[in-house]
Image (cartoon, rainbow, N blue to C red; front, top):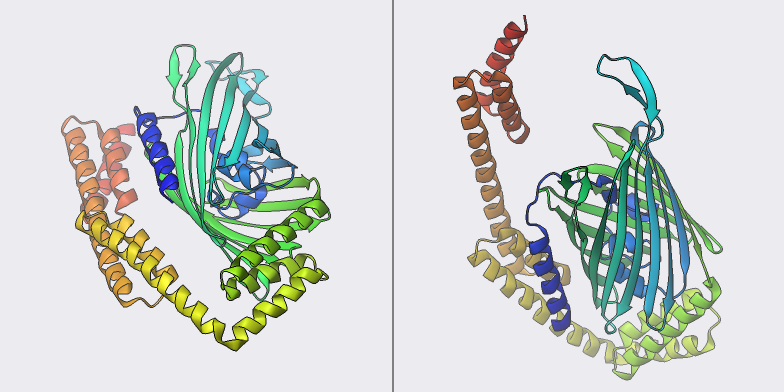
Length: 479
């Protein structure tokens, strides 16, 4: 855990320096994502990444791959814009190596001259070529790196850039993971004399793997922050039916995401539906081919069996049963797993279960208290969002923990009050600018400031009155 904290701290330091000069960015296509599975889950994938699409979301996820796979994604984006994405990754003894190519193509665009007459058509395109590597540092911690070249063209002009991504993954336990990634840290794009920075971003998230009705359920959440000052909370869920059909639902930047996935032999077909209030809907499809499926199954069975034996030798019979059930789902006829399952079950039935429960209960209590103490420190520093995160961790361990419940309510109330005050302060600033523009008779500029107020505070009475007056004045000036 200490090593994970050190690496996460390094990422934070790198990101803080990369954020200098935040403002308008170029190469926005780098935000579109790769792989319909992650997109259908609301782009909440930084802590769940475990396949070749980790190249985009978190290169540390490459380290979790046991066998190579190849993914191709086609996206009919808004306004007939086409987005294609191809990536491949293969594990070696020195880590997993991967690569991807992303292309955004506008198609033909009709040109016009200064008089409005038609001229020739032209095209715009954006592409990125990425090389990646991910490796396990130990059984829980993984690290990944991406290097990429980025190109954009507009008619007869072009610009290029180089950038890097960094990522880490930490498995708190077999079911719960934390992840973080910094993306697109590099040189700006330059068209003629204008430099445009890349859309640098930082992702941090968590993923929970569970089971309901003997099927896998994945829950994930990502907090994404961009260098241009925007941020979003993405959430997603994925439910597998017999490891053959996946149902997905999520939200990315406040917009609905959903999708399905089907596995047939070595192939996986994934579809994602994206909804945007301003631009309509988009449909994305990706196909993945996994090499060595049968070998992968054998490797997983061996991994589960080895872990089950380790739990059994430590007297942790309940955890041993969980791992053995995983192995038998993949290989129902495995004699060694069945024999050990019988022994572990008997041990539970003869009273060892209470001892194991008490041990787990004590461990949970200690871990929950650790998060509560961290949350209290954040409360003292008035960092309420961080405090809520820590109290949530405690409540995931012990849902009815009275102190955590009480402190969570206090932190939520304090955060709500802080956010409300911040909104009011921003509204006041925009109204002040609007009044300043009115004194100089710059009514369009004043209207823009009033519209900003109504975006963040739609019920602001003063802004509504001013909006109606300005609208009347602007219409009269036009006449």
